[in-house]
Image 1 (tube, protein in one colour):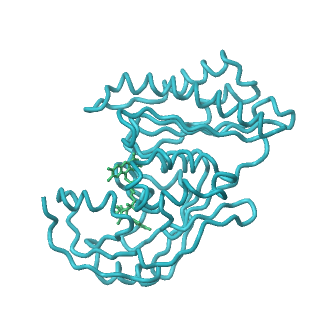
Image 2 (tube, protein in one colour):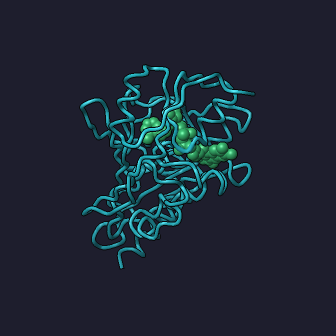
Length: 293
Ligand code: FAD
């Protein structure tokens, strides 16, 4: 199909992008990598009156600033996957981004676009929740920092105002005695996840006992979900022994009520949550032990 007609503008700064959005009203859309927006235009699922292309903005390179990894919004998925800095400081982000689409999609798609698009089965939003990321947003005369856990509302909908632009995403760097794990089930390589789990486990100074656990899920609700800490409380103080992990994974599955769709039944997704959570806890704890030596 062919898109509805729209005005096309290129901007060279985030301020100009905000201004252009404000001038053109609610039916204007930003164009970043185009890997979600262009298919939606072609299917007429999106009908913007204006596209504001932000690809001319030079927003720099990922950088570590103290305990924070700062990633500019226009950073392509491929740059994340190829970045030694990101592998060292936030390895789960590099790992989950390598599962996004195929190489053509990763060459164009951006981290800001993935978060703004807010697909509930997408890898990056899910990992951002488990990692405790912040989304830095520019609006008319304002800049605000939104924790990822407050960012997603429902299918393809976030708290972003129509005149706001994501300019940066911030991730805490991996600390000593922290480990991570990302697992997903896909029907074909390059597909969105049927279900994904992203876990971060931190150990006490003995490098054995679990201090904290964060788990996020994709593919189980209308948005990516950060699992309530009460559901994983049984692992805190444990050593992530197989029985403890199995009990926690079953408890996590019980917190979900996934819908059925053409890809999988709700019951199957729930079972996947249990199986993938078990793998994620076990692997994250093992990595935390290795990272504590
Ligand atoms: P665009 O498509 O340009 O924009 C998407 C939306 O975000 C638009 O509404 C746009 O206005 C808004 N937006 C973009 N940038 C900003 C910004 N800085 N601030 C505010 N709003 C912004 N994704 C996955 O997660 N997993 C997959 O397995 C996967 N497989 C794919 C397979 C194919 C064949 C294709 C075509 C895409 C796939 N994708 C997948 C989507 C891909 O990850 C997209 O790159 C991503 O969802 C959107 O990023 P983008 O830069 O292309 O954004």
